[in-house]
Image 1 (cartoon, rainbow, N blue to C red):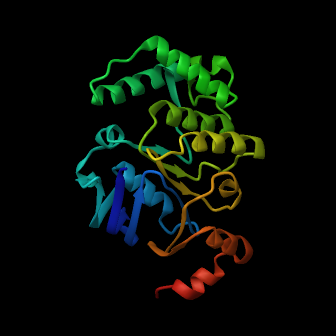
Image 2 (cartoon, rainbow, N blue to C red):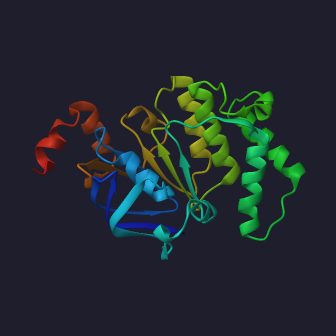
Length: 252
């Protein structure tokens, strides 16, 4: 079991404070959902965990199995087992899906001193693509170039299955997906669900949590996690919106 611990995290971007003291602990084997209104720090938290250079941490700590995550660069965090599925994946012209996945897998395997078996990699990639209902020719396309929104999100899950991280953050991966694509993306995440895998699912909506049942649900408001619980919080938000959160937890 691995543990990711956030304590008293404060952060800003371009001089504007966004996080005001986030506390959160995640363990492998757990799925956490993070909900909250727009503009209150959900994506900021995900980007800070992965090491986005535009965000400045002004206070607090983040540790991964006792190691200082904030002292690691982005590559080191990825090698240590962190993964971020972007809300808006970028296009990388000239780099095929196959080459991208192969190189990423090679780098991660090298951490454990393991050399890649290319034949086994290709076989597994084809199996994962079939599981995600992706056309076999997808592997020869340039990364995210000309992809539909659904294809970009499936590509993120294909990366997830290839790298098999210890902790994954999904920044509104369900955004813009039709019901069929949502089901495929969800089953990809559920495929890794085990004692060796933990996830933070950032979302506004209940619908993705109908397919990926969280162990814990947190509400982030005004840069703080103001309450945590079970799926009853999801139902409360679906029924009442965020008005009750604002009334109860607003800080002037």
